[in-house]
Image (cartoon, rainbow, N blue to C red; front, side):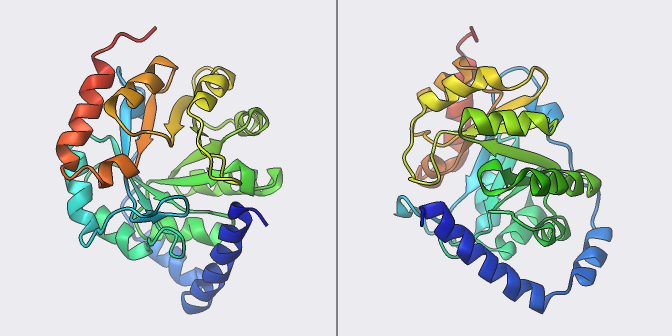
Length: 265
């Protein structure tokens, strides 16, 4: 069993517990009462690179990253530093996240919020919208074509923007085949947890013209964001480097100013 397989097994177990506690009809009613989802694409398509800043307590590869007693305050600092969107990890077992974190962040910031989880079932998208998410992560590696298309369709129906993530050429092709407008390229192989930032440079040219390209994983310094931009990234998702920085507002600002000070090839 790969690392991803183990994560997905836990995700499905936790999903069934939540489904038993909160019926789908209740989620639908909550979602219907939410304000319309925010559209992240105008900001992502603006000149210069954008940052999605992540609320992330721990990871399978690094273990505990940061004690985050107030995820809303952290998100507020990210937004003040210039982040165009906030990613909130909601997976419990390996990442220490929760839907309560999503609720807290949504209540505090005015920028779009991404539910980052291992979404394999429509129920999780109804959860995302009911808890205020504007975007939802859909990982090609964990979804068959039929289910991927179903989830993208539901995401769009709910007014959310799907971030369709790939980490191989075949997965980019599958993402592109869905007509996705927001395609992430993850430098981390989720079956092994190894990171290779050159993966983005290799795969970015395969993303169709007009789609927004998001670079994910492998960012440690502002120069890494600049490098991703030079390779064609419109958006860079940053987690670990920000939660460990000690000054998230200034760190987001530094990442942006360093990357956007360099001319894009």
